[in-house]
Length: 195
View 1 (cartoon, rainbow, N blue to C red):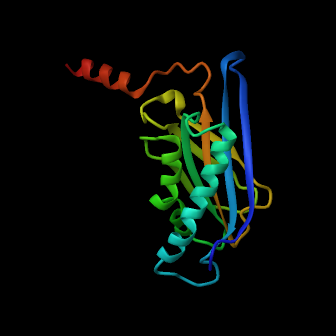
View 2: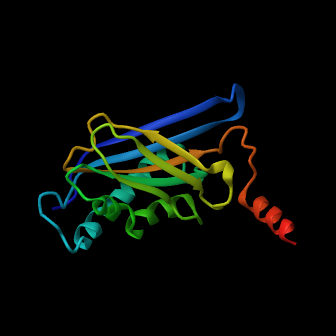
């Protein structure tokens, strides 16, 4: 079975006030999701998932990357990024994982934003209106805690039991008023305490 997309959904969030204080720079977060027929649905246990991964993942990677970079204004504007997949209740977690845990999917996004960091992710099983949570981190620096973000949304009719929802997340900016430092400061302090 080839790629059968039922719908593409986008979500935008802009935080202007955090903790009762105006943000110096609003945090803008975006998500783009494709809802598609699970290509392995109704086939029993499928041992080799590669034919469908090779046929579908690159198309999804290109489509969602194009959609989310247009939402953000450009790939270079995106500072933090992540990915997620949710398989419907008649599918396996492996089906959700198969479409996002391949370089044929993720490299479209990494290249478009010029990233060095790996894509953080979630993959879950759920029904219509389940929470889609996309954890994100800075595209160039995994230790930059200001960009440890999560965008969350749901789609009231997806994923159906025989579908997979695949999504990308992005931010322009980090958390307003971030003040917990980064992991490098922790490492330095811990090293000084051990000395």
